[in-house]
Length: 494
Image (cartoon, rainbow, N blue to C red):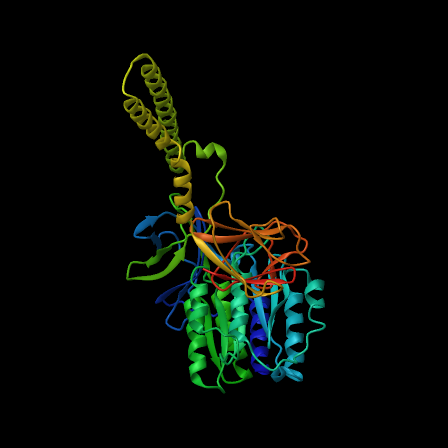
């Protein structure tokens, strides 16, 4: 697999070093949506118009040619920009094979190629390096510091026996979930392989399920000297993720690989639109892109998930539709509370009235006891309602199972109901308490917000890790994720 990895590195170097393409002047025949960034209300689409030779068509289309629909509703195209005309960077994730098959010149050339790439990146670009063999490790997290990136390459050696390729793709998906002002929106996972996985315990369908909500493009190069079934899986992963797949015979194909990769990333156009009514519901929504000229029309579509929404300032909340719903809810709650208080006062007054009536009138004592029991029953009907409702709400909360797979608590599992306020994990004062000498206080909180589970680090020493990566911001949890705190490792089951 050694020389195959070298192909992708050189492909990437050429992609960054030269942004030229061989676009035809022919009409487009296909529109490909590579990536969609949803940060409600903003939606950003990265797409290509391709001719019959799969070459990008220039110039980029205008708003007269492009229409966009979301769940059947037309949205206003606010802006269309060629990617090369923006100052956006790209977050590149390089997967580096450290199995013994890389020993010798293949590994030396791969390291040299990565160093050349590092020295060519722009200020807006970021690079992460993931190594995979017997294990998978994020050797260097995303950075544009060239000295830092180069230093992480010094001690890497190809000594492993296995090739956990699918696990490396899985980890690449995980580290690309993050977002922030200093992190590029446009992402690319680059890998060269025969498509065969050895011992990851994952399938190609596992990867597709995990990537469908985030849709991080995978650009892969398949080497031919393998069983074709593995190449089919690699091709499927690349195309469904919005990336590209190239099958190569030898190193003479480098230039062709460069053209396709360069055309896909740097010749894209960006479409910006706005969906003000969108909420982060965690559900799939159908996005369709239309290109139309005087002769014909073509469409491209992709399912997108509403996972993130920008914070709304307080003044906006007083007039927006969500605020109106909240105001109505508060009004109803206020009325219900007032009625409850009124009922209690009335019941108390009736109780006092009947007690006086019992003392002033000579009635059968059994009648007095009956009246008192009736009033007491009426009073008691109001008070137990709160704990009963609380218990019902607890039962309705979503539950999650957490299994300890490493540490002194190994084998223990916790099944807890998690609401908006969440449950803490850590030392003895936590909701989920671990026996771990490195852990004293609560270290992280798992919450359930907008139909998804989230994890947040609250005590940075020692740090909380998600799938081997330090948690820096609130991050989405998925089934099978692992959490590392001190000497303990926990697996999430949703």
